[in-house]
Image (cartoon, rainbow, N blue to C red):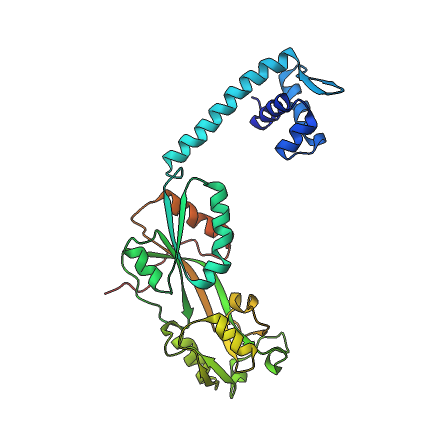
Length: 312
């Protein structure tokens, strides 16, 4: 059985007229390509190429094998297209919903990998502030949506037609102005040490964070500045300017556009789970492939789909 990769190498040399030019075309080094061709000659039991000062030419055995190899490679390519059509990944549309943090930091690398694997699928992306993306999935506006929930927190009601599959859990961390005393150490900060600190708050206008900020209030943090909309870039900029301290997802803190001090909080108390919302009763090949890709990209995911509180 001939290796298709080696057959493709022989065809490339026949078309390019030299091992060097064929190696450039295939992304090999010339010695590596020569090794592939030597293995193919051993498989064939005959010399396939004759080297000369201007490059290479096929032997009679090489011409026979190249003719057959082209047919084999054409059949394999046709099979790839037919299988893609069977799985729905040749053509079609994948509609995605996201929220700002995921749209900037999580979605682009995943979409790039999906595009490389399935270049014929048309992609569209829409912004939804959680939990609006879940409603968009339920309504059929998008196929998948990235959403999030905070702990502590009850989470928004999820329609019975929608499943939630966690893909990433991240801690909430403290952000301060650079050089702030609280961010000068790298050890975890007990929440009680936030007592008396001016807190840049997003409650009560950000329902998902109400329980988080209630816990901070219990620890003694004093709401000093209210940001009614959940704009983490603005929150980090205000903290950077020394207008207070804030508690934000780690991903937000590490990618802030303004300089901030960052310190982890005591383990396990505050976190955010990013999930993908989908319709489990509708098997869309492109959506299934993208969900699998998300799990491969963000390895801290749980593998079992879960449902949050069903809507009543």
